[in-house]
Image 1 (cartoon, rainbow, N blue to C red):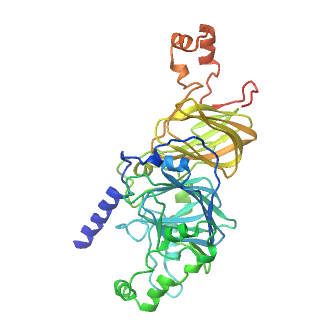
Image 2: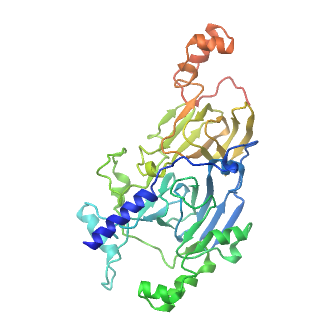
Image 3: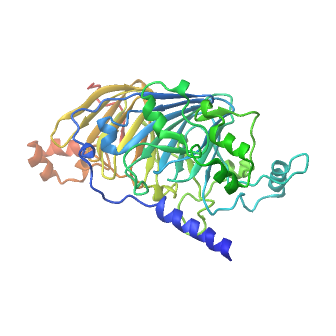
Length: 460
């Protein structure tokens, strides 16, 4: 009876705290989006580890302060393991390259993945669960397979790790939402590691910042106390506290790793119901990722302009609790992104391929950004600020993270635009143009929406 009560208590506490939605709060002066200029940014700090690199964008940059986020890029080498850690705010991840495995461990959930499956799947599980010597099975929580184009949601306070199972580097772009209700600390970026830490030889810029932020939480505990808590010898506990701290935040595995996980056909081959049914999807087995690469599943597709895939709380229900979302965009050469503004949350854009000319204007009619961005650049479009883009000669691909689980874009041009919804008389009197010109302004783009084919060849 007591274990059941503890499991229920653990689940209820985690759901109410780490999955809490965003609530209004008093912004500090630095967070009031008093931006004079927005420029594309590259990572400013790097932590070198045995298994790869962790790159950080400058969290003190005004645009990231405005959005209340911290951006990072993790690079895992083949057969490398990102060490288990947790953070006090939700994180949304885009897999830019490679494939591997990730697991998010929740308190109160069973140590194995339970699912109705075929005999072949059960036999496959037994193969991984039992060693050749017949020792006890290794039970653990669900392991998810990730690949290029996946959006992965990681709740606040949940321990997670990642393993690169491919032959090329695994590259992940992450946005951490410091303004989320789950973060009751402050606006400083931090992560709590169960192993490893920042190696002194691996620090580049801002060494003290990284040393204070990424730390093994077991390191300073009393060894005798931990030995009693784990019922393990003190030498093992000392290894947990001190061993491997010079290896960094990721390590190379001693041998190729394999895990108990759902059959691959079960994970990738079966088309699941994409919308939250509110009952059948339990907390412990909740889906944490969705792929945004497929043209066939694009939310907006134009043969002349490109495609747009959106990952929101309707496609990935866990995002309802994180109050975050993402989109994957692809503009063909010289195509346009309609001028628009976000009605819900800020937008953090990361360029994955090609280049584009970006313009952003504020409520004062000032141009905050009018620059060309390239692969690896990141910039913020604040809520309600109007932005647009024209792809370069090689096209433009990006992933955009949003600080809302229900993203709503309000376009100025196109089939679903604000201008199209206005009466002709309102347009003629607002802009002092003829009724014919007003009708052309409304209708010239026909059925195009958001993504626009190249127009009259004008450059900006």
